[in-house]
Length: 228
Image 1 (cartoon, rainbow, N blue to C red):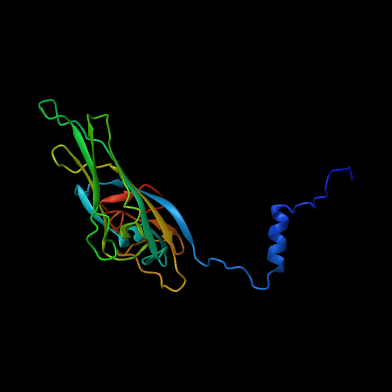
Image 2: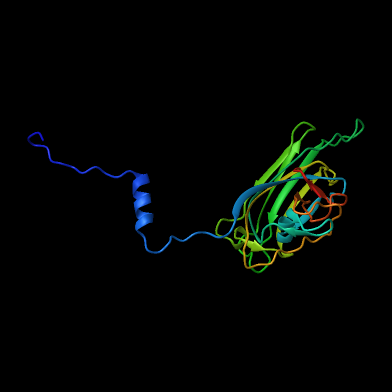
């Protein structure tokens, strides 16, 4: 050893430290025994779209389900948290004789009027002018509000979505993205989806409409496959 230099023991790398720490513990480390995932649901409004719709937490949990039999299905998750809602819509031309500028209006509202969801009460509107300019809106619940927390499958209002043109006519083909976080629980029995289905393949995962109705009647169908 050269004069003036002291000996320093080699530091263990992270992999060695992690292995040693785990091997020396008498009590196993805690683990998470549930599935939790972030996901973006995408819906396209159909000819059944009324222009405005109040989405419930049951709707969001019905939007991704597993088939039990050909006619029964169950929600894949038990809790859902809404992170953000995004809507894009475009108006069509009103006709050569019309003096009205083609416009599209989209909106999102977190009403916050139900117990367990207080503290949000915010809304936002977006407008697109012309047949080549989409209307756009994006809104998240207040971070500290109960509307931004995990909620079980209930018929309480999660948020309200709107997509109409300048004449207040429903816009078909609007894109509605709902960014959510899902979580399940081993102690909760899977809930059946609200609307019965037909022709399902047992064990297959399916995507449902925004309103929980089957594909033939839904106001906004899933953009993903398979859908039912």
